Image (cartoon, rainbow, N blue to C red):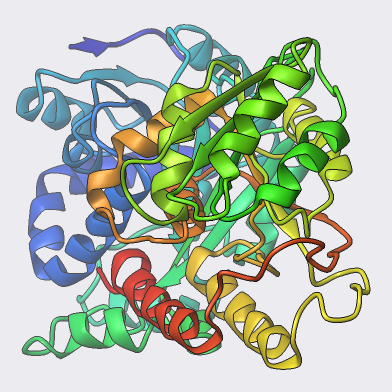
Length: 483
C-alpha cells in the first residue's frame, strides 16, 4: 500500500534529486540489469547483515528491490519519488510504502515502529542534514535495532563521475561524498554506537566471472579492502539506561579439575541477587564429579548444580550448561581458574550497563604470572587476534580467553542461527564469537590478569589446538568474508 501525505517543500537541491528520480524511475530496472554483478554482490552482503524475518525500515527505498530481497516479516519503505513508490507498490504489495522525505520529522512520525533494522542504502548522499536525520531515528529503535548505512567510497568519486558520462551508470545529482570515517562520525554525533565496518567490491563488474572471484578472495583482504567501491557501517543506539539488575548463571566446564572445584565456589563473588553456578563435568578420572557433589552439600546457601556431559569438548559442555541455565545473563568460567573468578563482576557490569552485548575477556593486556602462558602460545595468540579482528570487523585481542558473558536472549538468537555455521567448534569460544558477529552484537573486551594453574594440567595441546585455530581462521574466512 502507498501513503501519500502532504510534505513540506524540499530544498532546491533535493527537489532536483527527486525530479531526476521521477524521470528515471522506469529506467531503473535497465540500470540494475546493466550493473547486475554490482547489485548482486550488494544484495548478498545486505542479506548477510539482515537475516530474513525481521522488521525492516528502508529509508530511500527506490523501487523496493532491496527491501524485497531482505524478505522481512514487516517491510516499510520511504522515498520522496512518487514514480519510484508507485513501481515499488505495484511490484511488492506485501510490503508497505510511504511517499515522503526521510528528513521530514512528520514523515517519520507517521511510521509505526519499532524496527529491528533501519537501512540507508546510498540515501545518505542525498540528505541535506545527515546528523539531524540520523538523530530522528531513535523513536523507531529499540536497544537491539541496527542501523545499516551502505554507500560509495569517496575514493571512487572520479571513477563514478566518468562512468556516468560514459553511460555506464545511472545519472544522479551531486552527492555528499562521505568517507566511512565521516559517516561513523555523523552516527556518533547522533548518539549511535559503531559496531562494525566493512569494505567490499574491489571490482564491481563480472568480467567473465573474474569480478566475483576478486571481490570474495582478494578484495576482502586487509589494506586492499580499503580500495573497494562499497562501504558498509553497522551501528546501534547508544543505551540510555542500564538493563537493570539481572539474574546470572556461571557455567563452569570441568574435566579432571577436582582441586579447583571448591576454590571456584568460594571465590565467585555474589555480584547479583540471583546467582546460579552450573558445573558441567566431562568424564573426569580424578573424582571431579564426586567433589562437585560434596561441594554442593557443603554450600547449601548457594545455588549450585552439576550436569554430566553427554558429548565431548568444552563447546559441548558450554551448550549443555547454557541450555540448563536459569539466569538472564550467561557467563563462562574455566575451571582451571587461570582467569580469576573475582573478575566476573566486571563482565556482568559491562553487559548490564549496556556498554557491550558480547563481553570477552583478554589475557594479553596486563602482565601475567610466570608460566601462565608459554612464549609460543603468546605469539600465536597475538597473530590470531589480528586475524580474527579482521575477519570479525571488531577488535578482538584474545579469542581464546575462556571467560565470556552475554544475555540469554542473545544466546538464544545465536543458537537459532547456528545452522549457518554448523557444529564446527570444539572449543566453544568461536561458536559464540562468530554467532555474535553474525548478529551484529556489540563486542567489548575486559582485560584480566592471567594466573598460573594451581591444580592439574593444561588440557590444551599446543600444536594440535594450534592447527585447529588455523582451521578456524580458514572456516571464518569462507563464512564471514568470501561467501
